Amino acid sequence: MSSGPDGEVGARADRAALEGAFVVLGVTAGIAAYKAVEICRSLVDAGAHVVPVLTPAATRFVGTVTFSALASEPARTELFDPHDPIPHTHLAQAADLVLVAPATANFLAEYAAGIARDLLGATLLATTAPVVVCPAMHAGMWRHASVEENLATLVRRGVVVVPPESGRLAGGDQGPGRLADPAVIVAAAAAVLGAKAELAGVRFLITAGGTREPIDPVRYLGNRSSGRQGHAIAQEARRRGAVVTLVSSSALAPPPGVEFVPVETAAEFAREVFARANDADVVVMAAAVADFRPKTVAPTKLKKADGLAEIELEPTEDVLAALGSRRRPGQVLVGFAAETGDAVASASSKLAAKGVDLIVVNDVSAPGVGFGHETNAVTILEAGGGRIDVPLAPKPTIAAAVLDAVAHRLQRP
Ligand code: CTP
Image (cartoon, rainbow, N blue to C red; front, side):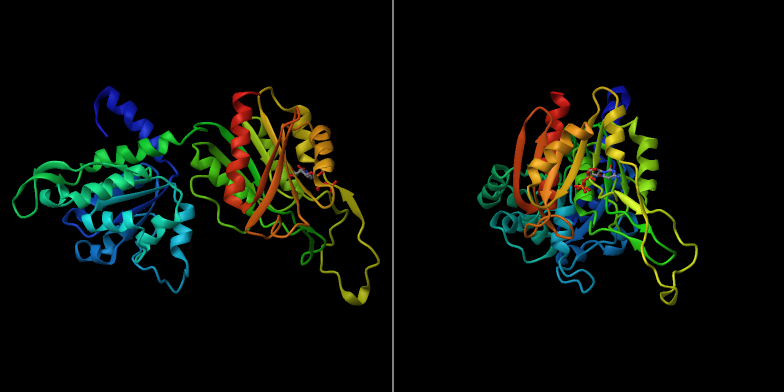
C-alpha cells in the first residue's frame, strides 16, 4: 500500500475490502516464508481475520509460534486434528480468500494436480473462495516448463497469480523468482476481495434463530430453529461487502466481521430490530419468532405437585408486519415462511399481508429441509410475481441465492 494522496485512497479501499474478511494464509516451504509473517501482520492490521496454514515442510523455515502470535487464530499445520476432525472443510467454507505466499514450485504442481495430502491442499480443493498464489523460487525453476504449465492451469481455473520480482535470490543468484513485495501482495488480496463486493456498503439487518419464551425460570416455549440459515445469510452478505448487523438467538458463533446482537425472546427481537431498522437498507427476518408467548411468567419454578392445568398464551408483536407497514422508501424487506403442506400458496398470501418484497419459503416437512438441517430447499417469491426455486443444497448455497435475489431487487426496486 503506497503513500501520498492516491496511496491513502488506495489504502482506505484496501482496508474496506479486508475488514472482517476471513483469510486463510497458506505458507509453503520456501526461504521467503519469513516474509509471510509481515503479510499476516498487515492483513490483521487491516481488519482481516487471518488463519495461517503452514505445510509441514514450511515449519522448517518459520515456526508456527510466530504466526500464532500475530494471526487471529493459532497457526495450523495438521490435516488430522483431534479437536477438529475436518478442519479443511471448516476453513474452506469460512474462507473469503485463500492467499498462498510463498507458493513453491512443488506446491503449484500439487495444487494444479489436485493433490490434497496436507491441510492447505485439502482446503484449496474444498473451497469456493477466490485464491491468490504468490510464487517464489529460484529463477531456473521459475522458467521451467512444468512450472509455467502448472501456473497456466491454475490461471485457467481462476486463480490469481502475483508474479515474483526480479532481484537477488537465495544462494546469490540474480533473476526472477523473488517473492513479490508484501505490500503488493496485500493490495492484490484486497483487490480480489473488493471485486467480489457487489453489496459493498449496503447495510443489512438480519435476524436468526428461534425464540425462547419463558414459562418459569427453568422452562420455556421454543421452536426447532438452529439459526444456521440466518447466520449463513449474514456471512454471505458480509462476504459480498455488506455492513451487517445480526440479531440472533442462535448458539452458533457469529460470522467474522458482523455486528452481533444476542437476544432470546420475541420482545427482545422486536426491541433490537425496531431500534436498528431505520438505518438498514435491507432487513432479512430469518428468525423463527414465536407468534405466542405465555401471558404470565411464574417467578419461581412451577412444581409438579401443584399441578398445571393450562398455560395461557398471548400474541407477540409481528415484527415483520410492523416493518412492512412503516418502512422507508427503497428499503428491501425479506421474510421467511416455514410451512407444511401447500407452502407456496400460504407464503404468497403472507407476502402480500406483511408488505414484504421477498419471501423465502421452505416446506419444513420435506426431507433435509429447514430446522436443524445443514441443508435447505426454498422457493423465493417476489412481490410483483417472480418465483425462484432453489433445490436442496447446503445452507450457504441457499444464502447465496437469497442474496442474489436481494441484489437484483436493490438494482430494480
Ligand atoms: N415474524 C416476525 N414476528 C413474529 C412472527 C414472525 O417478524 N412475531 C416473521 C418471521 O421472522 C418470518 C415471518 O414473519 O420472517 C414468518 O411469518 P409467520 O406468519 O410468523 O410465519 P409462520 O410462523 O409460519 O406463521 P403461521 O404460523 O401463521 O403459518
